[in-house]
Length: 306
Image (cartoon, rainbow, N blue to C red; front, top):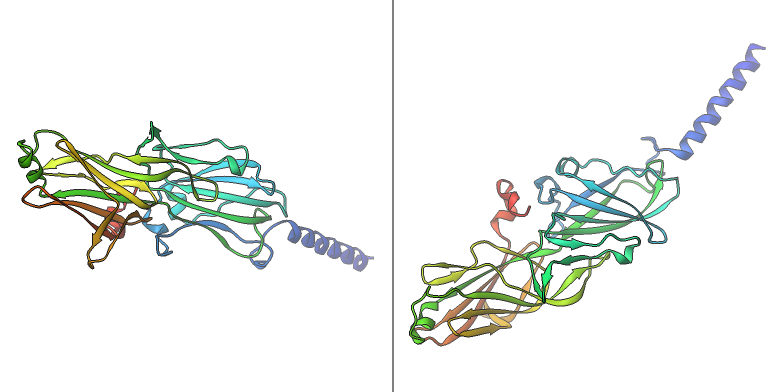
């Protein structure tokens, strides 16, 4: 009698255990379910999560029909600690998750009810756009299994979507001399033109054409941007400067290797545009340098991106 009772109890435990396996994750069952984390990479797809270049992130969780289920905020400790993103949804629920890093208020973000409504747009006034935050984007499709995800450990990889520009002059004093003016007698204006104003839920540029007016200041007799100015990605852009009573536009410039090409803004990189004049006041064009700022690479300077 005792043997029969023990056998029934043993079978009950086994059945209960199998039921548990079907609805939750255990360490030995990695094929069925695993954790989901956030990873930050640079423009070369190198893992920079631990550097803290993304100090906060926002997740938009959509169902299989693109309906928004929730939004979730991740802080610096969560991101750099690679903590698990828990998904408290029924097993076999299919989700599409969109992640944006560093949405700190310098751009407009829609409150979507479905994925196609999600836009991250430049703040602008009459096509004049403000500089955005240093943004990162990524998305992933997952299937929920036991508060984790099916098919092994997964990562939402977010990549940079903004770069920076610096603008300077060489020989600007000759422009003023030719006009009978003293350099520094009036303020100049830098412009960067021809970029779209929004990213959609796929991280693609969309929307309307806008331009930027990067901050500038005098340094001796030259006009410069005191700090790098953050911009959305941009191809074949036009750089301009208003100096004295003239405006100088450049759509192509000379690179360090002597080749000539367009002004472009690359994610996670800095574009330097230098306007140059001869001693006779004649405009000589622009020189362009594209490089990775040192402050992107040094841990002690990571707050530059934030």
